[in-house]
Every structure is written in C-alpha cells, then in structure tokens.
Image 1 (cartoon, helix red, strand yellow):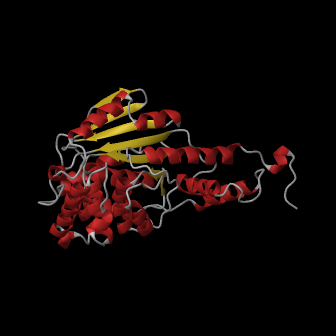
Image 2: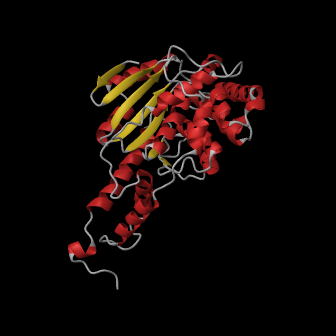
Image 3: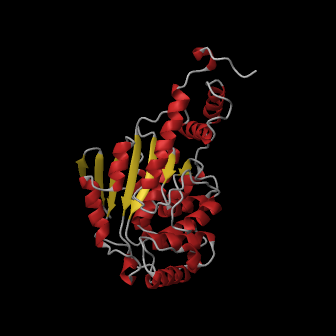
Length: 355
C-alpha cells in the first residue's frame, strides 16, 4: 500500500494480498454487535436547542440534524473539526459489454485528476474545509464480469471491506462517502435488484449519459447477473461479492467502521447508497448513523431510499458521484452545528422568552 499526498489529499493503493483479511462471517458478527445511539447526548442537544434565542423548532431540520449528529457521535456539544471525504475507486469487468459512455481507463484518469486537484470534489473540499482521501483499489485488476461468475471472490470482498474500514481513523468526526468507477451504476442496479426485488430495468438508469441502445445493453447485463446468481441472493453479503465491486465493498466496510467508531456518515448518491444498503438488509438499524446527502438524478436512487426509509438532505439534480452531493450536505451540517454551538441563550442575550 503506497501513499501520495497532495495538499490535504491522500491516494492509497489497495493491494489484493493484505496481511489481515477478514472473513465475511466476521463482518456479519461485527454487524450483530453494532452500538446504538447515545440517548443522553441526543437529549442534551434537544434541551440546548430549547434555550437558544429563537422560537422553538424555528431552525427546523437543522435542529434534528444536531440531535442525530450528537446521538451518533456520542457527545454534546457536537464536534465538526475534521470531516473526511473518502472516495473509493474501482474498475468493473462488465464494462466490456459497452454499458457506459466512457471506457474503463477513465477511472484511473479521474483518480489522477483527483490527485492533481482538478475535479469537482477537490473544489468542494476546499470550499467546505474537508480532508479528501482517494482510495485507489486495484484499478489494474477489474472485477470479474458478473454475468459469467461472481464479481469478487470471498477473500477479495472481505479484504476490500476491511480496507474500507481503514478510512475511519482516530480524530475523524464525520465521514462523507463517495465513489469513482466506470460501470459501477450497473453494479448498483444489479445489487439493488438483488437486495430489494423488482425488475432490473426499474433499477437501471443512464448513468454517465448513455444512449438508448447502451441502456438496453445495461439492463440486459444487470438482468443476466441477477439471474446467474439468483440462488445465492438470500445473503446480502453474497449479493455484494457477486454483483458489487472493490469500491462498493469498501464503502460497506467504511460504514461498518464508522458505526463502531462513533463517526456519523453522509452517503453520496446511488452507488454509495446501494453499497450501504447491503448492511440495511442484514440489520434494519445498521444505517441509522448515516444520512443521505442528496437525491441523485439517477431515477432508481429515489426508489432505493424508499426501501431504506431515508429522505435525502438535498435535491440538486446531481449525478456526478465522487462524494460531491455528500459534501454539499456537509455544508448544511456545518451550518446546523455552528448555530447549535454558537448561538446565545435567552439568558445570555438578555432576550425575553416566549410568554
């Protein structure tokens, strides 16, 4: 594993032979032991909101964001000093079916763009003071074509999940999770279909902007993948390894580590949400420490959020990926925390409370 630092950005290379590969069964056991929210911290946040110089509930969802943030950080007042943006990049074997507007080479090219500071995510991280880390995952070893075999072996999937867990380090107090990977909306479509049912065409959109013919190929690929692996799809982690990818598995791992480490999560768009949805299928409370930053323009994202029972914070008609929507949501959360921690109380400001 090598590291290249540029400004506040670090790119890490994923190796296929990590010394400490965790099994999928071990991941299942970790999820069973997930801690719950800190009710005391949440109650303290609620009480504190009630004494600030504003009518009760006047800040609306900003107030509930603070309650959520305190509950899953396990502290009051909340701290938002070191948010991390983690972008996981991987390549997919199904791109050989021409299901994307771009070739698989673009994944590596965009990683280089991240490194040089030229992408949207770089500008947004600078604007909202977030630390960017890009996790480059074996880009010269694409997944297997899931229409022919599982995308990943069990060892590869477990290793990718374990690697994703390393994104949650001591001192990080929030993590925004995004991805980069040509072909990964096809994986997200097949994975979502496997997890929640329905027809593959309902879960499949135009991704990076493909035409009608390519969309038909994409639907066919997702459908063939689901059909091939159907006898194994009662296990969410099997769905992930058979239809996902290195970066999707890593996202699942990062969400797991964040729960254990009391680090709240902002998920980006369709692909990141699909990867996290695997955990929801294992435990319906597994994503309670996560919010979804925005509603992707990819139509199936709204359907997926309905299954998860989550409302996106923003709807900006974005479909870029690379955690761009999650960072915009970070800006909202920063505002919420600033009001909660910086506003004066009625007594401090000598303002009369409501009669």
